[in-house]
Image (tube, rainbow, N blue to C red; front, side, top):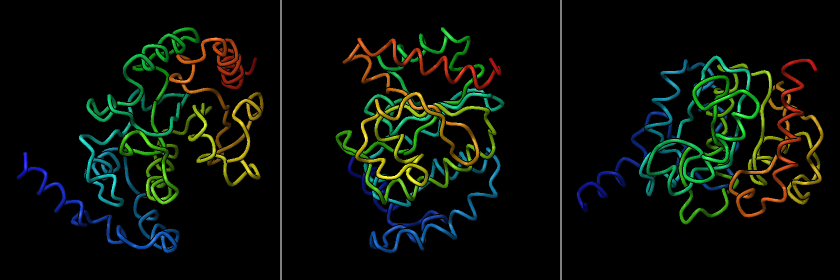
Length: 231
C-alpha cells in the first residue's frame, strides 16, 4: 500500500550502512564501490545474506519485492551464475524459478546435481531490473562485491556462467571486447573468475525459446563436469 511504498522509498534513500555511496554519479562508481567492497569481503554467509537483504546501494531497491541472494549447497563444487532476477524470482526470492527453473533442474539432474545438493545458484544482480531490462554497468558494479564474496565463501571447483549478460559481467577483465562477441563464440573454452574455472553456456530461458541449442548446453555441462572429475 501507499504507506509501505513510502517506507520502502525512505529506506532506499540510504539508511543501509553499506550504502553511503548509493547515489553518486556513474562516473564515481568505481571509487565509491572500493571501500564498501572491502567491508563485504570480510563477511561470513550470514552477514552477507543480511547485507544483500537490506541493500540500498542502487535504485533497483526501490521496486523490488525481494532480493535474490541465491540457493543451494554452500559446500558445493559447482556454482551457476545467471544475470538478474526476473518477475517470478523477484516474487519468490529465489533464482531460476518458473519454466526456466524446471529446465535447469532437469539439466542438473542429468549431471547428478540438484538445487539442494552439489550446486549453488546465484545471479550477478540480486534485485530485478524494472521490466526485466538489461542490467546497467553501475548496477553490476555495486552488486559485484556480493558475488565475489559468494565465490570466496563457496570456493567452487567450477563456475557455469549462464546467458549473454552474465558472461560479460564475469569475464570482462579477461576477454577483450566481450560485449560484442556472441555467446556461441565464447562456448567451448575454459575461462576464470576469481581464480575459479568458468564454462560459458546458454541461459535456460533462451533454451526454452531455442530448443535446438539444448544439445550445445549439454556439451557445456559435460565440459564443466570434466573439470570437476578430472575426466
